[in-house]
Length: 301
Image (tube, rainbow, N blue to C red; front, side, top):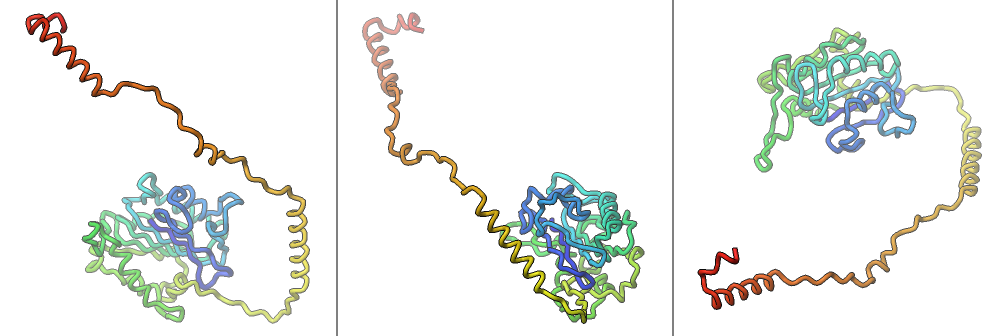
């Protein structure tokens, strides 16, 4: 499963791309949970969270959320251990809108009955695409006979093939993206929802969400950097003084490895080998037979 957040043209700063998958770049598989995903979207995360795991967006940010994995009517699985529902996702997007965490949002999902995941959306400026309608399965593509599994889903394969031809100056719009995987190729019926989106999809460029092209604002005002450099220099000196006042670090006492290696091994208690015991019993039985014969065997057992 992969979830991608990206920022594009109308944004003021580049939002980090987070790939939440099975042991991925930004998060280990233990961190990929429904709770953590919703916290990243809504900004309800601890202050100690690094910037690489934050969604640094504002009311001028265009956000892309791409999800793929096993799912069903109204849910998507996370790690095969928990699920996110379409209601939870819709409420998270509403919180993002209320907190001014996005300007426009593009939601793409590749899973079985994917259209059910955007049925409950009610926040403005959201455009949604899905690989299949309710009641349909999303099929895989490109099997690998060496390992016996499919490497990619059909919808993802054709969308990726389409996006690889896009460049930052491209004039391709969202209507073209809607047509990339017809039923003849995907087998399922891809769907999209645009009623919450304020702009006409034919006027929305692909590069508004893909390509991370940022809008530059030109100013004619003069910016004095001298004051900022003095502040940085003073803060650097304060950090140096703090480091000098800190007690030097010491290593914790370690195990005496050298002594352990060179110490004499402990002597084990002696026990007669198993073959010796069996041989002794065989000798006793042979002596008994030779002395008393087989008719006295009942006195032994």
